[in-house]
Image (cartoon, rainbow, N blue to C red):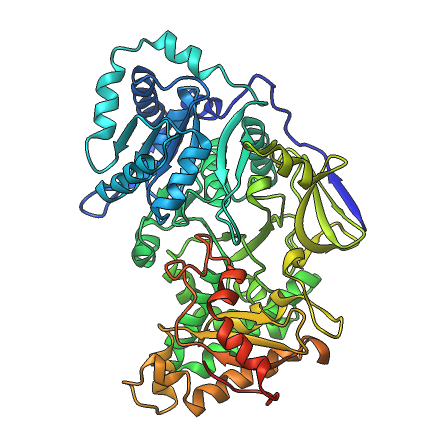
Length: 608
């Protein structure tokens, strides 16, 4: 199949906008809980739709009183927390346009976003963030910034007080100004290369996609369903799910620090979660390492094999009786313990950002957590395609959501059209023209549609490596396989215009101590020592050899180097959504790469 189009399930009036989602929930007799917040004692308190609307309107009136005009851009720079969502909807109620900023952004990055968007005001979390924003604004002579409101300070109270001078009719007029065709937000791509681009997402993108996604995912996001948000709300994936939950009446809690994620999961007990594949890799690897450290490694691996076999049989439509019995046994011994670590009530997880892989998908399905893998970009308001409980095929990213279409170009590029696709790039008509062809958005990703219309991602067009011998190599396949191992943190495959394929690999600092202990190596071994230790090199060689079995000889990794420093967001090698900045890695480690190709090839182990 080369093209598939799925009709809308829900028609939305053209004079609608995102604020109508809140109003609709607040007018329901059931008055659903839209958010949960944690008090000082660690107890969760629900915020129902009427209360949320009241809080949003009070802040929105304050924005109007502070001369934030219709269409003005207002930045939000904070960690994942309730006030982020409150500010987001308040800006919409005031008729303005939110501009998310990653709270980890540097002053230079913030300066670019503030200047390019023309933001007139900003919400920030703390004094630290306020300092960054003010420094950024001062560095740009074109900055229009006049107000900064701090969540940790008295910023929201200041707005609520100012808003008492604004009457309800003025707010109602402001709230109703935007329609589906108007810009709802400008989201700047986290950017693996170059300066971030501002994506113009409309109210149609959010409202039509939310309404249709809620219909397609009604078993997941519905009134009474609960999720806990820990991904950054500046990222389109978390932001869309936040709006989707308001549209569906589901309840959202927030945790600002992933170090608190496990206790928060256990105290909140969500019914579904959303995460990027690296989170699922960590859950799997941590469970495995815990079992091995407790002398129960054989039980874990046997249970994992049974979970995967059961999932594959279930997807095929028939689980043999003997396998069903083994599955029930391991559910008592293993699976329920993993589910309990995630709160005990999680049935579904939505995964995006990168390929999850068949093995992890089947493993989690086998333990009782169906991972609904999806695909999308900032430019497609996050989910363009997704597996649903009624239409799931593990190993794919699902079929298009209602109202969207996918087409595979002659060169394999995925093209997109529909309610998810952005209007264009802010201030960049040249980029808009460049990225659309005959009405289809060019995603830059490579993929294929199966006979049932399910999409499978095979790589990134710009990341395809062409060796000196003319062989096309998709690095993601090798990288994902290698990175799935507990001892590996990151992997970058190298070889463009080179005679053979090589790789830069980093070790997982959290997993290393346990690995050293299990291999009877000194507990005090440092990372610098580990990268050159023969046992570690041999282990990585085994992992690389296994990954090489998935590709042809010409695509196989011939040489690798273990580098002593991990690739992180702080080091500048990962985006906030945990994607590798490949060009930056190759620049910063160019001496190691050149060293690989400057010496006669000795296949296998190596170090920086």
